[in-house]
Image (tube, rainbow, N blue to C red; front, top):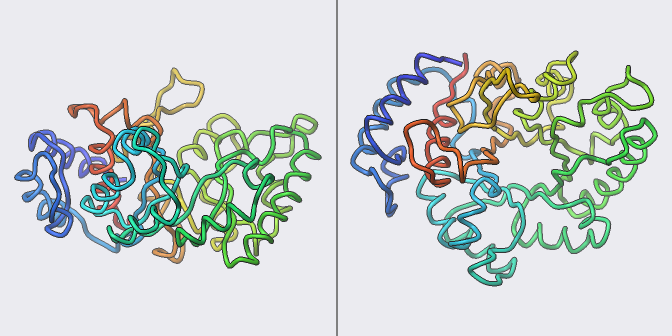
Length: 331
């Protein structure tokens, strides 16, 4: 990372006193607070950024779980309008309901995506959803125009070698079914997958899953934050090395930032992107084939934890995080 640049940019945003967007295209039609300050941000950010971009703007996405409060209270239409105005190009779903706003069909969601120039890059569904009716899940994924569909569940709660081998076989079945429909099935990690087997403390469970799933049909979405938490709790690996072993297996990355917290058993606290300590510039710069992965911002606590100096508002977190991700340049 480039701490001084990030601190200076954060200070500028605080002085500007509001939510910001990047560039005239992002501002068009957006009813956002602090629009006057936003108009001065783009030149400052551009001047500070040099080198090749690490996440191309057309592949910056958002996991909708981050702003689930807005989806629930405002609905997909209002949310997609705001995300498009911020500059996001892609969304990853965490369900297809909008609670307080009322029912909506996948076809209606797809129309709203198209209306706002957004692309559905993937979706997190429960393992049970695929066990119970995988064809329905794949139908919805195709209606929404996804290339990927997957789960944020651990492969299994059975942390034995046999348990993970059985899970790998099950995921191979999911992957084959998705591939038959032209889709890529993926699994999103938390930290527990990097723990060691309960029946063999020398075997890392993620290795069992990685080595026994078909790399042609079972893909992986690395949540960078949880991988670093896994490294803290279960040391002995570098998160980026898994991607470097087979870059094609990782079409999606969760760009979730963390601030070091020695008092936490996790080693980090989840924070807004750019406000933390995870080495995203170095991490992404170490990967060959830049621009071939989708960078998806996620912040589990965005509805309750803004960056210091900002009001609680998950839209604000989303917009500032877009600015930070967009500014990442190869080291």
